[in-house]
Amino acid sequence: MTVKPQLHAQPAQALQPTSIAIAAEGFEPGATVTISSHLTDDAGVEWRAHGVFVADKSGRIDLTSAPSEEGTFTGVAP
Figure 1 (cartoon, one colour):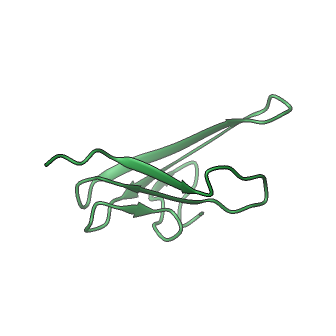
Figure 2 (cartoon, rainbow, N blue to C red):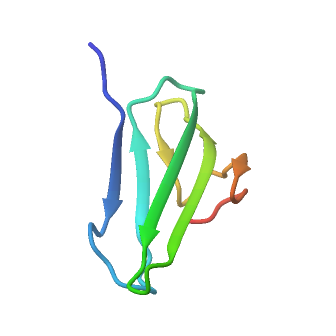
């Protein structure tokens, strides 16, 4: 059985400064995965970020606890 990677965000919609819990699953354990975001705000300013993560033994990455190894930020930044 093949599992496709999935991205989950809770809540699905939120205004700042509401925290959003983000997790990804469906990867091979130990896989290196880049997760990126892009937003254009109401003033037309573009915001981008990306981090490189390592999937845990179940093939999951929980951004509230998994550190970014490299990218536009490192460490845990939920």
